[in-house]
Length: 372
Ligand SMILES: Nc1ncnc2c1ncn2[C@@H]1O[C@H](COP(=O)(O)OP(=O)(O)OP(=O)(O)O)[C@@H](O)[C@H]1O
Ligand SMILES: CC(=O)N[C@H]1[C@@H]2OC[C@@H](O2)[C@@H](O)[C@@H]1O[C@H](C)C(=O)O
Image 1 (tube, rainbow, N blue to C red):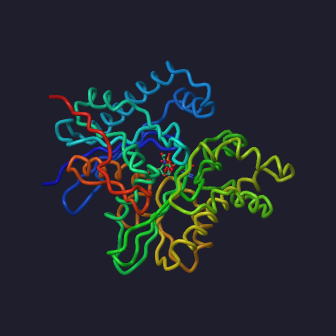
Image 2 (image 1 turned 180 degrees about the vertical axis):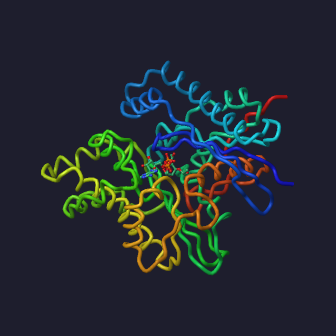
């Protein structure tokens, strides 16, 4: 019997909350409807302030933010239901990723912190909510990310062809789906996705992103700057590996551009776009030399200049959007968290140890019951 789920995703770009209505049965996952609820500017500012000054966190603000984000996630789910004319009773569960505030998998005490109180989501919507997906994988020795590769495998694997799924959100991550179905998928974060381009566009254009990459397309790549950026040790680390705003952030960008004070802003944008495209291409070349097909998802799929650069760097390999395989690129992550919630409710593991480095597969997440 198919069941309906809602996937909620608020990613590292902080551009909004994706809420996706998904129908799942034994053999198929189909997304039926979706909305993006805007992230209120004040909340976005508070999140960035907390992430930017981790040593000076005010616990009262952190607690309040957790509660307010939970309410916002609940509102996004209810808005989606009202738009698609469904009642809470029609929905088996919500899978909520939460908002990552900090992710530190490689320290003495590894931890990852997502907020957006799931109790509030369950209480406001009355729907059973699954959340806190990353920490069990980390407790089992994994990176706690990326988690979407298991869904990529279920939805996009194509026996006979090695496919690479590339998510270009704030950060970028790849999933390698081997041609031989008996081989386990692999994957990792390749580095920055849109985050550095977004930061630079905000500073110089006053806009949250470089629409379609038009500004980057007007500039020239600064090869020396690109080489310095690519020399960042993260790019040569071997997987399993994950990264985030803790490393690739405004200070990182400032340090890079300070070293090249004469490079015009449009050229820096062209170079940042090239950094994203090159680091993804290099990761695919090194880790999936037999790749036959690249599929792109995440908001970066809407950056035409970035897509052209990916196509040109990967040629003759075909590079296409996941839309060509039936899932619009902006809804893949939300759909994945609905799928992961279904795995949890069915008592099935959601992590891939071959991706996260965990010692073994685990059932991910915590279940917050809906209304009686
Ligand atoms: N039309 C567009 N032109 C250029 N860039 C775009 C466009 N639409 C979306 N983007 C980019 O996509 C980003 C959002 O992508 P997405 O929602 O996949 O990220 P996320 O889920 O927040 O991040 P992550 O996957 O790292 O958690 C925006 O911040 C912007 O940079
Ligand atoms: C800690 C965290 O939130 N990581 C995100 C982030 O955004 C992209 C990349 O870095 C990926 O590792 C992960 O998200 C996706 C949804 C994942 O877990 O697959």
